[in-house]
Every structure is written in C-alpha cells, then in structure tokens.
Image (cartoon, rainbow, N blue to C red; front, side, top):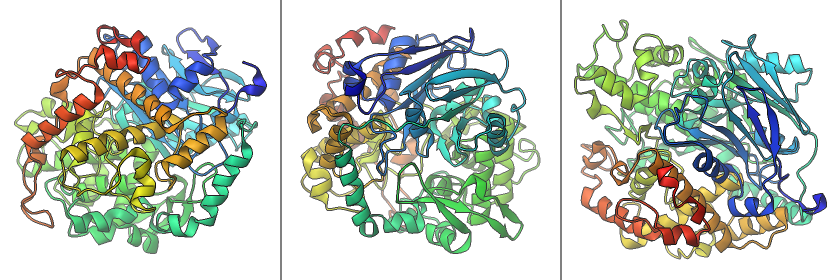
Length: 626
C-alpha cells in the first residue's frame, strides 16, 4: 500500500529482543489492521501465535506487548489510550491492561503502532524511541529509584522534558505479581501483573518522543466530533470534571454496591469521608487530563493534611483506588488513602490488587488466621490506616507478610494456609475490582468469563449516566433498560452485545468514559482510517479478540470450571441497602450457559470450529493445543 493511502496506523511494529539486543520492524499490512484494529486484539493475536503453553510468565519466552489502536493519537477526546499485555504472572493466562494519558499517542506520533518485547536482558536497560528510531540504553543507574526520580533522570539524560515515559517501579523490579506499569507517573496499566513481566525482562522503562501527527483520512470529520463534544461539554462532562470517577462513591454506597471490608458489606459508614466531593473540597489542587481530552477527570492532590504530606507529581486517586485502599480496607481517612495511592504510584503497584491483598490480610487477622507474629507487630484490623500504609510498603518491598501478599491473594492464601482460602476474592487468580455483582447482577457474568480474571470493564454497561438510553444502546439492538438485578435472557443478550462493544474500545484505543454513541464511534473510525467500516464489522473485530483470548487461556489450562465467582457473592448481605440480597448460583449458571451459546462455545467452553471460521480465525482452531 502506498504511504499516502495509510491512515490511522503506520504499518510498523517494533520488535525488541532483549537477550540478543536485536531491534527490527514488522509490517503486517492493511488487512491485519482492519481485522484486529490494535490494542487488546493485537495482544491476544501475538500471545496466541507466539507464546507456548509451557512459557514461564516471568521467563524470556513471554512477550510483553505495548499496543496502540487505530484511534490512539487522533486529535479528539478519548484517543489517548493504549494496551499492554503478556502472559500474566498473576493468573497464568491472558494478561492485559489499559491506560490513558499521553504515552500511547506519543508512540503513534513516533511512527509505531506497537512494541513487542521478547527475551530478557542480563542487566537493567531502558528503550528509547524517537521518530522512527529505537535504541537500548543502560538503566543500571535507574534501578531501585521511585518512579518520579527515574522519570526525571531519563528526561534529564535525554535532554528533553517532553519525553513520555512508561516504566516500572521497585515493585516491578522485585517481580511483585501485583506490580503495574506507569506512564507519566499518573496513568497506570494496573491489572494482571504487567509490571512483574517488565521487571523480569529487566526493562525499567520505554521512553518515547514523537513529533509527527497521526495521519487522518478525513480530518474535518474528526474535528467535527471534537467540536460537538466541546459544544456539549458542560452538559455531558461536568460531573467527571467536578469530582472525577470518585464521584460515584456516594451513589454506590447509597445503592449498597460500595465494596467494604473485603466485600463483606456493600455500604461504608464513612463513605462521605472518601467521596469525590470531599476530595474536591479538601485535598484537590488541580485536575489532569489525557491526550486531546477536554474533560480533565484526573485528580491531582497535594498539601499537608495533619500528618499526611501529599505530592502532586503523582496525581491523585481514582474511584478504584479510593475504594480498594479505603472502604475495602475499612479506612475512612481520605489523606491516608491518597498517600497510599501515591506510594503505590512511586513503587509501581496496582492499587486494586494491593488494596484487595491488604483487605484479605485484614480479614485473616480479624479471624485469627494471622496474628501479630505474622504481621511484624502490626494491628492489621479493618480501619487501621497506619497498618494499611505500612502494608503497601511491605508489599512493594517484598518484606515480611508483604512478601507473601506480593504473590497475589490466591497464592498467598495457599502459603498461609489455616483456612485463609475462604477470604480470597479473586477470579482466575486476579483480585476483584471495586464493583459489586450483588448490586449489578450482569457483572457476575462479566467477572466469570473475563479472559484476564475479574475486570471492572467487562460489564453489561447498562448503569451509566449521560445520553439517552436508546441513543447509547439502541444501535446495538437494546431498546429498553433492565433492572440491575436482572439475569433474564434479555439481560444476557444485553450483556453479550454491550460487553462486546466495551471490549472494542480497548482495541480501538478509545476511552470508555467518552459520551459518544456507537454511530459516532463508527464514523470516527471511518474518518480516521478511510475504511468503509460498519458497526457490524467493528463488533466482529471485537469478538475476534475475545475468542483469541479465550483460546489462549484454554491453551494455558483454563476451562469452564474457571468461569466462576468467589463463594461470598452467593452469600446475602446482612445489612445495608441490599440486606438479604445475593447472587443465586443456579441463575448465574443458567446465564453462563446461555452466554456460552451466544459466543459459540461448547459446554466445555471451547469455541466451535464453525464460530472460529465465521470470524476468520480458522488459523487458530488448533490454538488450544499450542
């Protein structure tokens, strides 16, 4: 294809072998990009093609993939996202995580659509990419530094404070399985332990600088969408700008869906103390944003608050962090929660996994499974903010009980024994995020079938503010709302369509908080690429990614028995707004069977040959066996 005809992607994937030091490029062609789009789909494709069933997630045969989508880097709000994936050291299956910010757009502006890292260096290194060129540099002087210090050192060394840096922290260096990857210190590829994979490869960072705009087929069409959002900004985005994602704390608490004390409860008596409104009024010093975005939903906190000193360089906590380190640990001290979030950012820890590991340990402690002898003297009860902060450090440093929790709660429970398994809240080995399936029953399907383990974006999506229901969901064939506690055939159908649509965003490189309708997203994809894509084609591309991830997990030993939830979700709340409410095992089992049928999976959870052929994945039919 002629260079002038290529829009929205560069047809350039950077391959880096850290064992040999070789750097090369691949050019997969237009058909590949149109079939897979990028992001999460490109990750699943690479894992299925290249990572064998016996590959150690922390070994050189694993692949670490940074992948933008065809929308990433376009000059429109929401186009700042990209994905990172590998075989997960936390679950042993398909791992990926998404983040916003500026790094993904910078990679596209530097001339690449993805970076695939293989092998492992024998000493710490970082990768420097600038306008189509790449080189491996020593990172021995960066090893052990907090993320802010490492980023400053890289920018100073390169003589360019415009360089965007994706990096691990000391937790990733120590291969903590809850380690994340941070970009620009405030945006996190948090889930599935990607920081541990990067640390195992001794890759401290990827620094990127790009100066060339992403080519667009119809710039006027892209700008028209940007102008539409600007004209409707106050109506559609004011809430996110005002209180950020933590603006949902009080709504969820009043509904009984705020995870509290390791999901024992769905409401928190101190919810107002950690809510977005309180953050705005007491510790907020600024609002951050992502590439080309006008919303500014990111929190920046700072100042001295009693004994707590907060540093704005690390931004501030999102909803997931507030609930994981706050209500789920019973902590109602907002400054302590913000400081814990800051320490996670400096160490390179996933706040969800870390908060849930601490909540698990707190419940073990309160039930006598752990004692002060196990906790280095910490009184690790729910609500003890100082103990929560101490455990963040212990996990990041792999010290004491933190060394055990650094393996993730599922493995930690096995190491602890004494009945600790009954307090584990994971799916496929990954800690549950901060959304409650006893409140939103369709989320139970999402958690169970998610290829990465429990993921809060694998949802039916039907509880959202913003534009009218039919404008948002009508193009998907969902014409009327359903109760949040519904698990009928209608709800399973809605989950199938909406979750497929949500998966799509992570392949396009588009933020799910944007109030675009499906038709606007289709138009945006057309205006960026020049392809005559349809809603149907994009939905098929999304399902293609889901099926590849499923096949990879099957290869890694997962099956239908792993599509399950922790027992706690089948236990009714004792009090609060949802007192007496629980998921019913038979209802969820029936819903899962129906979903299997819609996805074209047999009773064992294997995609049928017919469904794979229908999606153009006939090449993957042997993928289960590697």
